[in-house]
Amino acid sequence: MNLINEPATLLIILGTGAGTALLLWKVRWMAALMSIISSAIAAGVVIHTGLLGKIASNEIWEFEIFNDLSLTLGTNWFSYLFLASIAVLAPLVLIYSWEPMRTRQKDRPFYGLFMISLVGAVGVTMARDLLTLFLFWELMTWPVILLIGDGRPRSGKAMKLYFGFGMLSASGILGILSIVSWSEGGVAYTDAVNAMADGSTGIRIAMVLLGAMAFGTKAALAPFHIWAPAAYGHTEDPFTAFFSGGLSKTGIYGAFLVVDVFIGTTILISYGSVNGLTPIGFFIAITGAITALIGGIMAMMQDDAKKLLAYSSISQLGYIFVGLGVGGSTATAGALYHVLNHTAFKAVLFMGLGAVIYRTGEYRLSKLGGMIHVMPLTFWCFLVGIFAAAAIPITSGLASKWLIYEGALEKGVGILVPILFLASAAAFLYSFRILQGGFMGQLRDEFKDIKEAPITMLIPMIIIMIALIVVAFIPGLPMELISRAMADIGMEAPEYSLISLESGVGSYSGLVVMLAVVAGFITAVLMFFSRPLGRHIDLRDTFTAGEEPIPNMDKRYHYAWKFYAPYERFLRPYFNNWIGKGWAKVYKVSSQVARLHRSVMNGDMTGYIWLIFGAMVLVGMVLYRYGGWF
Image 1 (cartoon, rainbow, N blue to C red):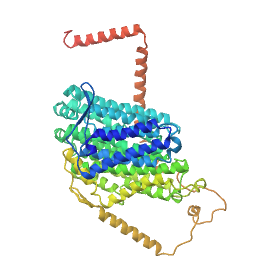
Image 2: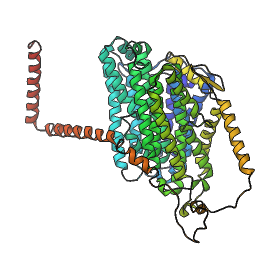
Image 3: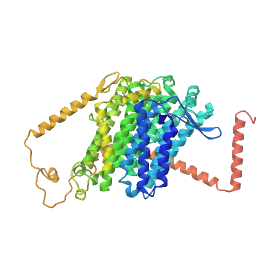
Image 4: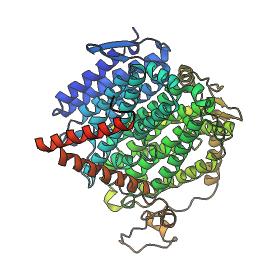
């Protein structure tokens, strides 16, 4: 029996783990163990199904909950890609969390909330109607609200911010549901397709805007991104790896659902073109490129390492939206490829940082430094993650961005190139800052005796690190899944083999690139050891031009404070949180409206009578103005 073709089975496996972990949350080891076992079984089912290559794409399962009200579930290869990226990551994060949550589990049911959110995310990818999508969306979102709050200052504000944008996202889905139900009398995905096909331009625009509000918010697309740095920065460290690496993919999935399933290519091209793209595609691609740039620039200004990685995640997700907007075979394949890459490298980055925070209790780069000397394995895992995010050739990160760039070149979208170039430059700068500030340079005296991360934290990081390197050699490995996913949304994948990728303007060989990198590394090593070795010196000597430091002097030479101060002085006026200030004005207006509502709905019957009378007068005036009373 193929369990994934019976969605209820997979949800029952995860739901059992969630219920048990929630009930036994006071018994930490039992809650953790049940979560790990159930999520591992679910991940095994998902992987086994992918290896078998058998998914009943056209089958829909209905589960009646009330009269004439049913939940519909199903899977195809397109939804499977997102399901796999979430389900396979979950047990790795849960294993990683064993040590750091040993004491913090007492504060809240961490494992129960984690598993409930996982059930919701899996349900989102399996939903086949808008009502089911909405219910699982809320099931995924609410536990996260309770997991935000790590005891640091401003964590309460982060929780409120995520709550507000979570409601905005849910409102977008409800808006789409309402339009489709009003237009077609149903809420199935097929009804949404028909609503787009039969609807006016106004309905189509409304669906796109509501989709951007619903799914762009979850994927931290500008200008809906401002919740992410606060939420990622104040979530429990183990959960942040799943939050950024896994849950963000539900927003990407929803965006693909609206653009490539509900709207479709035929409708998109009927509105002409802008710079070689459809108008909607151009809007999405430009927004994605701007998101990549804003996220990169804001990341390089952060001293808080978790916020740096949060802005980095925003930037990387922007590349996926560029691929979605550009469309076509190559760019779409690149976007889906980057979905898988982002899941891996962002998880290992937050895991590596979480390991450092676990050992040191410090998250500020200006207070760290030299961690490579005491946590070398964590450093190498983190380094591979940074290389993947920056698309450096020894990891699979280069392949997905190469496809996105090639897709843009195929369409001749020249305006994207300078924006993405600047975003890539920013990625290099923030990558160097976190490596130099956190791992390189001088080790502080108070951290000289700390140990490497526990084995339960290292194993998941090493697994992901190996995967990123192996796929760099054989970049065609994920393309079989990507090609099947693209076929389910009516698109053909670009040509590929196990070791190479093809586009309309060039080709990429992972094996050749990796061999060139290895040859360069061997050459550098031989050159280094061919020269006489110097004496071993103390770390402080490198900061004093070779002069002997004063004996017993503990002076800090590590450069990490205001790392990019000159760049920041130049850029800050242009990136002075103007988006945040705009949302602050929206909050102020909505608060005033809420206060007015409370003043009217105060339980006073006289006020209610006047309200009803005023509404009747208003309706009467409208009816009289537009054709009389009847």
